[in-house]
Length: 430
Image 1: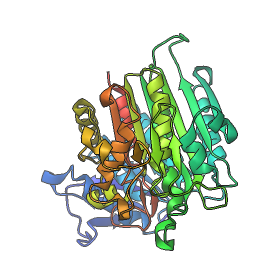
Image 2: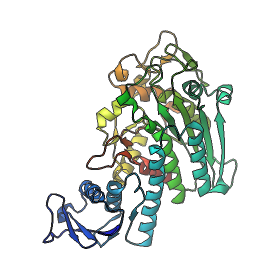
Image 3: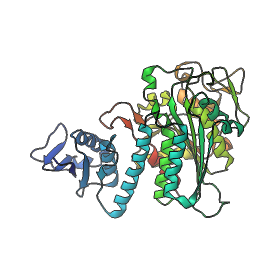
Image 4: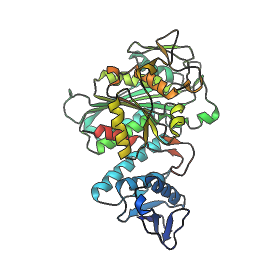
């Protein structure tokens, strides 16, 4: 077989059809058999992509009339892996091919970034990579600032500073303004806030080796929101959007933050540290305060935040949280339309009080493993303290489907790009 295989979707079984794999082969052409009544079975098509990639195929060209946009994307997700993140050529009319090609390029950028080793990708380089990527798409519409190290503390971004101060690789906060309106006074439509923990040791609440092994992916939220903005720009976004990345390494040293420390945020909220491994919510709090200060209509934060969300969704779905039911409804509708699985988990105002402290307004977690019962909802409740207007227009995405440590029947090992399409859809919704 040559390096490029031609992939056809068919409802007719060939004489050399392999029932176990649902594939048939003829020269460089591989056919995927899907029963006519289930021609839109995207899960089986994604699994077929995995099987074809495992044959050693370097690149594919999709051909034939049975492909739709969603089925092509499902195949691309299954076929893509480290070293083959953009090795799919799509078919159909030019508009469809352009949309899918843009989507694949953006997802490849995000997946490659998330897969980087933690010694290569540190907080400052994460912020710079995101800035350079977005600015390269629309240089005339982008302005930005990277706030680093001591300047974070001086400007009151106390969560990012304290989480990252113990590392030799100092923390950084990217505040990027995409404004295509030509009006410097234009209202900000949306703010995207991303957790950018480039490596998470757990700090003094140190993780075991098995739990720490994949923690290069803990900046997946930052990569996801950056990629979502990039895809929206490529798709014609004409609204003002701000991107805020909260970047730090959570390490152990004589200068690292400690259990029992109290951090006070710009909005006056004091937080006792009950678990240094619940650091993501501490950096996101700064980002949410900064987003709220803009008066924007919509705030979306994304983070690989809790193991509890992964336990609830099995890593198959991202978890959605909002006090504003409209935001959840919009997000779920877009996620379903894009085949970007997401599920709504509980969040109410009372969740903000689930991490009590005798010495501060709240603790950042509890001393129980995983934050105790309802850990994902309690983390979201913590974040709700830092969003204005009682959470109106705010959506929190716990990216439990962002990364797989091991390959499975649907995904290669590594980052998935899950969540990008949903956030992009929210930005482009009229």
